Length: 98
Image 1 (cartoon, rainbow, N blue to C red):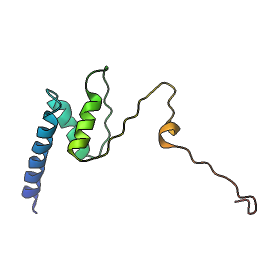
Image 2: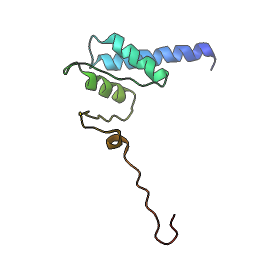
Image 3: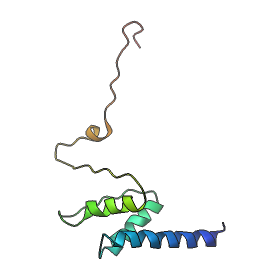
Image 4: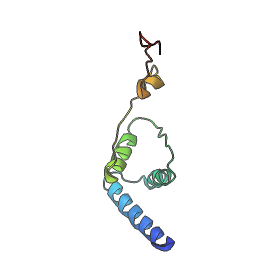
């Protein structure tokens, strides 16, 4: 595939993705475009807003349309990074001391 064909395929796939998302999410084209760009760049996105803006629904819809896994973390004031990533416990062997 040459570059022109790759760009055409990307545009076609983008249009299909936007069409699937627009079945659920209405009137949020700009944020959907930004999310798509972040996926292409392999970047991270932090969605902020008051309750009821469909942030979770948007990401769930995007993950369903792209056949990706979706997990949600509810942040609280006492949430620590280790609560998300886990911890590693190093135990010393009795016989070897290692």
